[in-house]
Structure formats: C-alpha cells, structure tokens
Length: 97
Image (cartoon, rainbow, N blue to C red; front, top):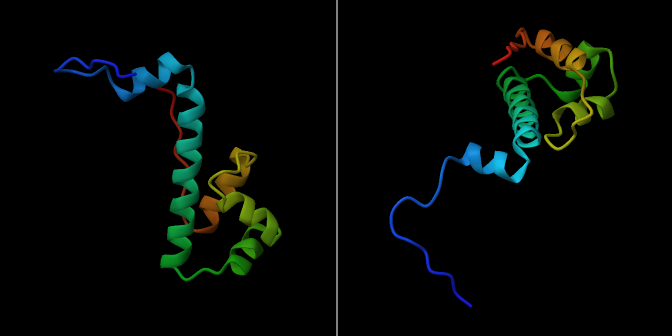
C-alpha cells in the first residue's frame, strides 16, 4: 500500500510536529540534558580534568559523576548541574521563555 504525497510543503515546523505528537516538552528536556552533559564532558576534556578529579571537586562519587555525564539519565538535579558548572569555572544560565 502506498500513499500519495503532494508536491510542495510537506508540513509545519519540527516543533509543531512534536507538539502534535504530545512529546515537545519531554523532547526539550532530553535535548537540554544531552547538551549540558556534552558541554561538561567537552570542558573536562579541554582542561584535562579526569573523572576522578571532577568527582573530587564535586565531593561525590565517580558513579554519581557518570550519572551526571550520562545524556540519558534524567535524574540529575539543578543543584548538581550548578555545582558541576562551578567546578569547571562556568555557570548555568536558565530563563523562562
């Protein structure tokens, strides 16, 4: 079975698609967490900060640090993200849009 696709514009924006599917907010949360985890890992790499050193700076375990750096783990708190940013000389910037 094939569907006929009309030529021209195929649809609205990706954001509107996510809204229509009811997964926009969840998708944004996942994306933000992945970006922050990636940024932290990148900064650690650039500054040659090992996981052991980062865990020491955060006064936490390597396992907790691994959860923080895991883009699929959504149990990380804003407090932990703020502490991690501070440990690498950065800040977290949040705003309501």
